[in-house]
Image 1 (cartoon, one colour):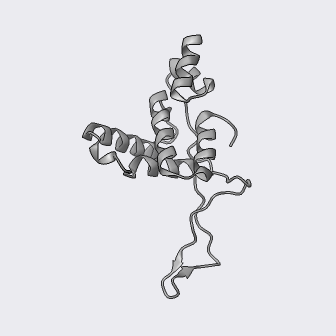
Image 2: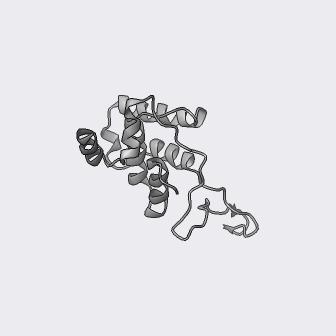
Image 3: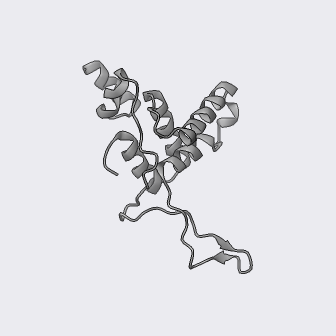
Length: 140
């Protein structure tokens, strides 16, 4: 257990996440809506009215889910990604496709770590914080 705890600290994962490493994986609630620091549901910006070039006030943006954030983070290229091997790009793309097609399928610890790492690189604090809490198995 001490070796496992040490590995968890190095990987930045909680013991609840690391505990599933011996099993088949852990199901992540990708349908969970992310909440901001004030407890409000996070939404995409409202659509833009092409005639005024301003947001349409009567239309709310779509709720942002962990699945949306995870898939986007895996697919978006960031500085330094141009040097990644094709195998890593395919790994990310296949994981994104799998999350979209089979969100209830258990993920391995290295897949959860990759999703956390990518979300941390791509998004701001207001998205990273609730996403990581959900990925860790904490209450959002």
